[in-house]
Amino acid sequence: SLKLLCQDSIEVGLLYPHDALQLLLEESESSELASDFSLTDANSIVSYCYYHPLIIASVGRWIGIELKRGTSTSSIFPAVAASVLRMRDCNVPLLFQVLDASLLSVQNDDVSRITKLCLAAMVMIIQPSGCFDDVYL
Image (cartoon, rainbow, N blue to C red; front, side):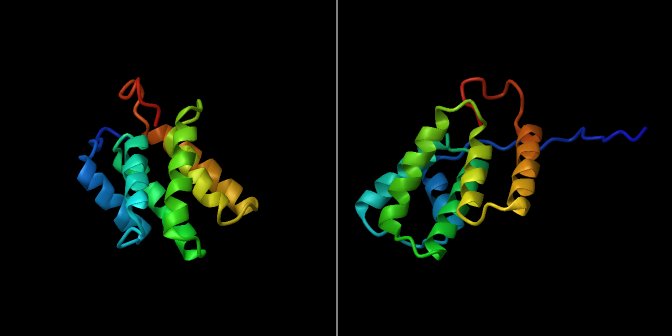
């Protein structure tokens, strides 16, 4: 039988708020925020993501997709902040929900459904059991 050997692990620590905000802006490719209100929402987003770099990078890419589709910075940041806050209350890993939401804005065909299934499997693999008992990634 073929056995997958994964003895090495990569630990990903949480980010400081400033670094988390910088990552969000870099991943979303939005070099500047439209208003102070957007900055407040961006700070809320990184907080709602528990300052976790994988979740923040995924949210940033989701924002980037929306910006490329023509959504304004002043409207996308509050919308994403509200969505991520709602997602935290669900019993589904936050990382999977973020990836699902970003794919929903692209397309909803068989290819994206298969991709979502693969992402769900990935989330279950990278989510350490018991490491974040109070934080459901």
